[in-house]
Amino acid sequence: MKISMLIMVIATVVYATLNVTASANTPQQRAYIPNQEKVGEARYKVLFWKVFDATLYAPDGTYNRDEPFVLALSYLRKIRGEQIVERSISEIAQQGKASTDELAQWRDQLLDIIPDVDKSSTISGVRTAQGTTEFFLNGSPIGTVSDVRFTPLFFDIWLGEGSANAKFRKDLLEG
Image (cartoon, rainbow, N blue to C red; front, side, top):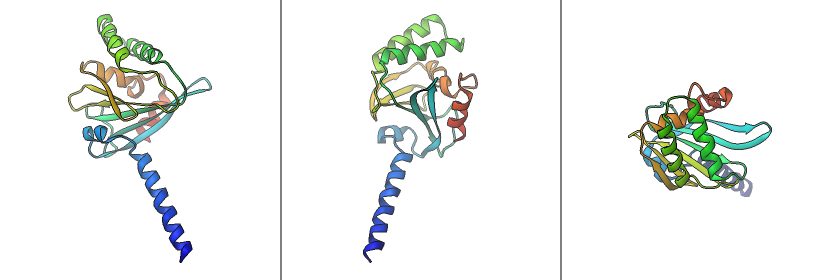
């Protein structure tokens, strides 16, 4: 009897742990996507350095770039916020779809939003129903970019057909 009780307790703990991991976003983030499920996940590396683990969530686990979704980046190393912003703006610029003025404006906005990160930091970007981008740090809101031109270009860094890392993109989009 004691062994079966212990097995039930262990099974409950394992189930709860897996359930929390599968829907690791906060209630605020889930408000944007009520039926969110994980679409896929991938690890981003530069050479042999692990930078972050990414998880893509969408309604019923089906990604559509024109509908709400969440892309969560869980960092695996310490990185200055300014470095994250500069790399993001550089990646957007390489797409060739934004003006110099737009890039400068978005850079300034992101510098006010994106903090320094370390191994305990997760920055989530939410593509809202209005087409804007809401940012969260470890589940707490940290800022918004309201320009609807920014949103697809920003998320295309990882999710767009022209993404620099095809395998990473595929892992996010196909599980």
